Amino acid sequence: MSRETSSDLVGKIGRVTGRIGPGETGEVMIAIRGGTSAYHAHPADGGSVFTVGSRVLVIDYRSPQTVLVDELPEFLGSTPG
Image (cartoon, rainbow, N blue to C red; front, side, top):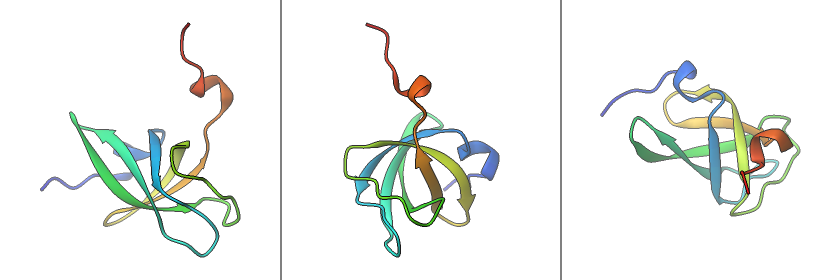
């Protein structure tokens, strides 16, 4: 099993698969190294809520398998028509 580093994950876009909120451990799926991995997730600001299906931006990585996430900026969320 390969070990990711902060630089591998920070800035990646993930999809919420388990509700993320204050005091809760959610889950996010992140595409990395040719596959997709699940990570425990917490809101970076400690107060935001992200529902299942939301796309989020990884702000920080905490070993071994946890990320802090924030709202995906609008310019990163748009897809070409």
